[in-house]
Length: 314
Length: 256
Image (cartoon, rainbow over all chains, first blue to last red; front, top):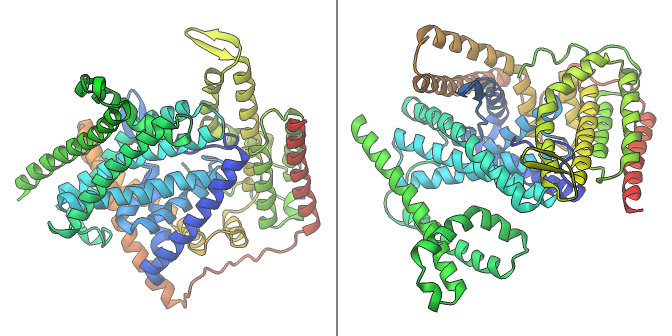
């Protein structure tokens, strides 16, 4: 479902995403040529073949259905974000041409969603989680699993935005539907990616992309924490803008991601504030708090699991 | 996701394969897919013209209709399922009710039209892909604006996907014979390990291939043994401009 077929995108969305995807692919090609120099062609070629072989392996889910690996975060963890992006682009070209999985007119959008968001942003999430929580095999696996889940949902949201923008369905509906479908699909992707990275980190840690070394507590970790804090504040500010400009595109994207959580917190935590605080301040506090709590909850779970397993292993 | 069927109908003599090189064929297919995929909603007359053009394409490629329908049917779920949601999401007067769901008339029209457009786009690409060898297709990408690294990944990926699939099958067989009655969790873990193993092996193989390529004088770029010959530029320009005209006609039809 992640692949948008022909006929769903409008001409303007198709053209815009094609140009953007072209720019991303050109940059990714330059960066991976730099990173891998002359080994680039065989390494990426074999990685592309491996992703195709891996996608043929079915994982039984329930009631006769099965899922397979998409692989964006896995290749990014192995070969770096830009090489991973390029591998996924090659896979998408073959899928569009030969298997008609994803349309040719939507190839730009699919490259942006699956190679751009899926591999590059997934890698970023994975790297910052490792910086925060350390780099033992279990924690690397958990970080990859978390990154794969978030990246899959973000891929779905991106596809939903493009579909909504094309006028196929109301934005709220398309983003919501794609996000919820991918929230389910992401579970399998996350489990497979996490297990595979865990194995790789134990058996062949030298194969994992070099820049994913955990930073010692200190400046880098502070930078990452500051980045996450900044993200929460940004979300708060955006929610403020969103509530004052209800019809904008951003509003819907933010609303669907965070509004429900925020409404719950607003109701639960600030029933009395509403009386005397201006409405937007209460809303802003609720947003920042809900995002901070989400992050804290994820981090706490992550640390607890990571520490427990690490202790048992040694 | 099998690859073995790819070249079965390639190289059959036909009007299309005689008159066009793989690159030209691929350009026509891409033009047709864009004309169909980006046709504005409601341009029914232009879609009918496009349908006729694609039907002529089937005849020109001498692709058995049975094969085309089978290959298009395999791609059907990719666009049929999302399209079937449309009648229930597009607002408008109710056309029919299925249980708690109400399908709107404009929604039904939109779904029918998207399915037709997607079928036409997929058919156009399938026709050309079916009558062209995969290796020719890869060298056709050289003349299109695809980054060199993507092209070489695709070329090497095509050469080794069979090797890696076989290797994975052997590991999977070994896995099955060792854990027949394992619980689902253990099975998942084992299969994920197999996948990790696949990447480890392909990495090692990549290093070996690189050494072998260097010893054969590799310096960026894979040669092709079958240079494209023949082809007539006039026909390709004519067909592509015809497709562009149909798309423009569709735009005018909607605006009028």
